[in-house]
Image (cartoon, rainbow, N blue to C red; front, side, top):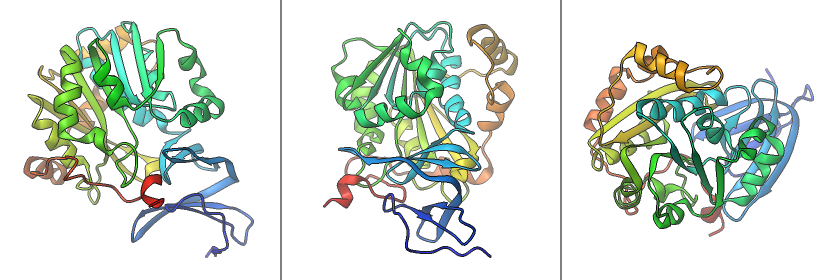
Length: 331
């Protein structure tokens, strides 16, 4: 049995680096009060810092390659981020008849923009992230997205996405919530509220427009943290809402996404595969019509929880996953 030592480097209140007797450092993230998730590192910390809004760290892990951490929570891992980003981006774009314009809230690492720009119909992508340091950090270290950041169709804005979207004159075919999880004191939780969806997101969608957001952990033990309330909140605003999930190995859990629109999501396996073939440049690594059908076929526990959920996410009734943002820890 390996022994960990508590005289270690701490990168945030949620994560810890442990050296052990075999001279192999381990990263440890506190998933909940009684659950920790750890894996071996090739090196201790590639980069670490604290911006005005968030703690940021990049680790080099043996299993998952480079991993990006924000406020102590795993945001993206080099080896499996394609699962998260393909699920976040492609279903909404494929359900839309002709997506040309997209607004990304967050998305500072550039992977959401990379996936969007694979679609031949896209003319303009606005990526709005609040944190310049995160964007600069990802440009420097996550070289897989260099081409996306250099694409002339991408407009990068460093600003509060809520303010930027509200002040934009144009409407968008797709609006994407590629936001950090809502943690207490973090910068993102207001972008999961009913007032934001009703007063800012929906009015900025073009006819047939689709909103899609990451919606946090959606496993058997974790779906009621925020996933079901985000789903129910969107049901109060849009006529049609579709939830789907997939397992993300580096997150140690099943993850959830929710799409919403006033146009019905019509699905046919052969039609979606045809659209992927016609619209998407290059090969997708994870998503096809069959895998999306599987992702949107939820188990009984999750289906019943979504059906029975009554909580609506608001500024006065916010729910948070485990962890604390910079603002909360500084008070």
